[in-house]
Amino acid sequence: MLVLREYLAAKDINPKDLTVAVQGVGNVGFWFAKLAEQQLGVRIVAVSDSKRTLAVTDFANNENSLTLVEHHGHTRGLIDDLHDTHAEFLNRDAVLGLDVDVLVLAALGDVVTEDNEHDIHADIVLELANGPVSGQAYDNLTEKGVDIVPDIIANAGGVIVSYLEWLQNRKGEAWTEADVNDQLERYLQKASHDMVAYAAEHDLSLKEAALALAMQRLVAAK
Image 1 (cartoon, rainbow, N blue to C red):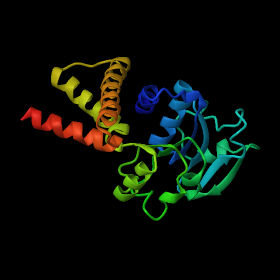
Image 2 (cartoon, helix red, strand yellow):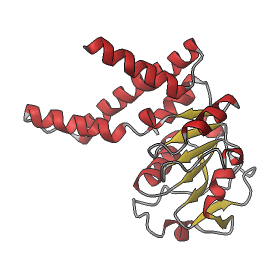
Image 3 (cartoon, helix red, strand yellow):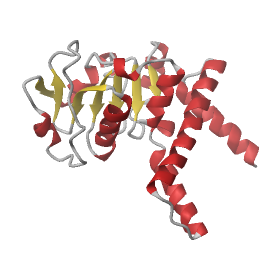
Image 4 (cartoon, rainbow, N blue to C red):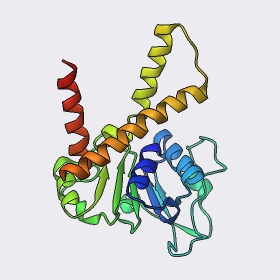
């Protein structure tokens, strides 16, 4: 959610204007959707699990969305709980082809490949799973103008917090949740800003920019 927020700010895009579909509403996808809805104001219009997709029937109606705010992490059975008169069940993979602004991939690796990349209609794809877009599909979609925010940045929060936990143990300290969240936000803000700026300066995809910066820092650290 933090990475998407920084990306949208860099592109001068108002999150409240965006429709979002989330593939995979486990611990990653659920909390992304909940926080993005609460803190960014995006409209969650579709979610999917391993069996089916639940999507609102009228994206153009700004009143129609799948509200996750009142849910507290109990993702099992979530789609059944969300189902109402403004939504319908679709097949599991239908979430990939919906005409939304942002497609969030929070399930498995290689769910978007050369075989189904033509199904993608979103202008922005957020990789929250590890490698959900294959290399060739990534290149093809990027060439078509789709901005794919890469997993190396978008799902780095867990690794960063693990580092912060290690740091606390090394120092014999116990930080508050607010302290950890503040540091996490600081790391992700800088990483996101650097990636977007480097991509624009060197005419690279976001993934290429993130990897180029990483390589530069590794070499400089030697």
